[in-house]
Amino acid sequence: MSRYCIWFVTPDDTVMRRAEVAINGSIHCHQVLEEIEAQLAVDCGLSQVMIVDWKRFEQFEEQPAQFARAVA
Image (cartoon, rainbow, N blue to C red):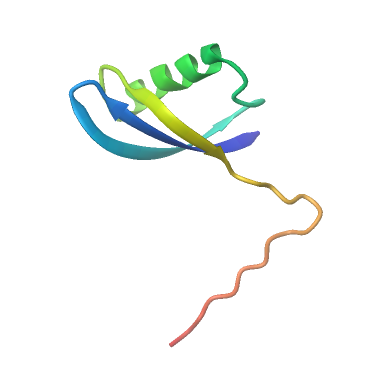
């Protein structure tokens, strides 16, 4: 699974929104983007969305992420 952060707008509202998606494979062609747009529209209850940018979340399989939390 590849995880992406997707930025999108709708035809009637130019406010940029963000969603996190997981797909099998990668975003490698317009067809994949169109499938993601269609599913985002359904999931968000919108008639249509247009993806304007995306970034893949890096996954470091070799070293599991260790998070520290600051306590005040």
